[in-house]
Length: 180
Image (cartoon, rainbow, N blue to C red; front, side, top):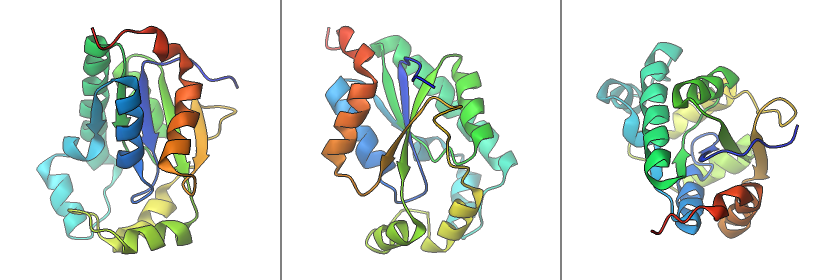
């Protein structure tokens, strides 16, 4: 399936895959706002994760809706927006598209559990303990480029290489003059 042009890009993957770092890099290059999905979780979700309790779907729907609407509003203001969100299941990705009311290009940071566990061990996250990595991989439904608007990139590539790959896939966004 060819990629559908989109004003919204969401960098997705399990915790510690580099979503925020890559998303910020893409947003900088596009002169577009960056919205980190972590900032849209209600306090109850944060407390659950901090306690090492995986989120269930009922926890995720309001969070995903807030993020999707905020990305849509940001894209209305600046012609493009970039977000970071785990978006682990296809139904979550479909829900984000539905609530945004427009196509979204997902950039999936693909990595093995061993590679991600190594990265996770080297960083500290405000509320995402390493103990939740197993549940992240158990929940993950790897996006299929044949059926979803997704660009799959290896987490082992440099941030710069991933950014350039995403920008090439979103070449249609260069026609906007966001800096005006």
